Image (cartoon, rainbow, N blue to C red; front, side, top):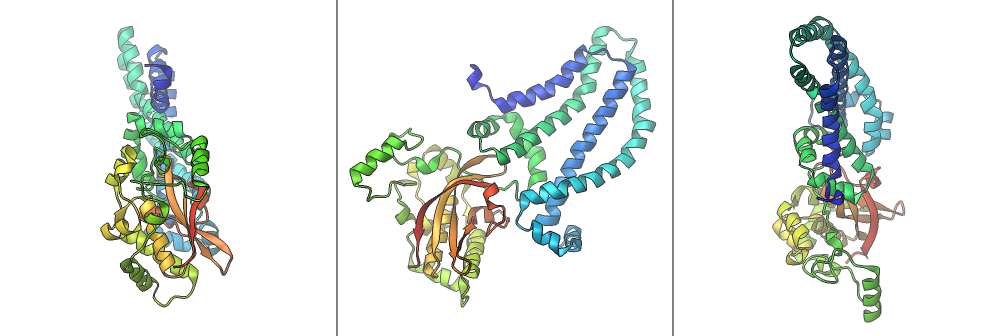
Length: 405
């Protein structure tokens, strides 16, 4: 296997795990070294546990409305602070997690300090007395065993660092590495996702193989090259839209509506007159009534041409991927007199950046376009006119704009 084929994430996790073990193998196991390692391990466990609990508690207070004690805490927070943080997911975590972490570490220290002094330290001394008279190889093996908990904590912290780094870095290589790393996937499924199951870690996958651009060229082509675009525009005189999506469906075909969709849109908005309110009601309906089609997403990643997409099929089957969600939103908005766009770019799913589609709806009262993501909204998060929408939606490109029918 060449260096280029090495999975960088797996390599990093393995190296981080191995370093403490190597230190334990070649280091001289003394009573002082054991005591220091134990104290250092306890500090690292406190930090890891504190971060996990802080992130979890922050998510429960600010993002999950289930009538629990956490909601009561949210109600205590001054209204000005809540208004400042509303829709600002990342800002919320940046501000709130350190505050909660400080209190958690103080509470943990009240428990861990007597535990260390009265139990772990005497236990460490007894273990050392038991192995100090053993042969050198046994002592080295004991040194390795002693460092395993520390290695596990370091590996977990590294995995969290990789996860949060991916939130800010749209790096295709890093995305591929995390998807292909069995070590990272194991940690993510069993540790990180249960804790980060909030707005940061959505259940919605994104398409990671440039699926939106597989329209021209040979079957195996990955992108439309600038040369192909130029040649096609010369051939058609620039009068035909190049963008095709799945199974040869053009954008105009994808957003076609029918009488049933139009009637449903009309019943959803009722007698509302405010454009923003109508746009929000449509967003809520699609987010709640359309289920994400994971099987279709997998099929599109393998072969996009064999898939039918668009507004009508999403409405009829009540399932779809991001492009279907966005196409249906366009159809419904046009049916109730809203000016709307379909946008493509990259979105962050909680563990990977990939191809994604969403919408913008025009709000004339404020002369601005409102960002709307019905796909991410189906996960339970609020993605209508979200303050930090651009944090997990990048490289936006408007593919089409429509007035009312």
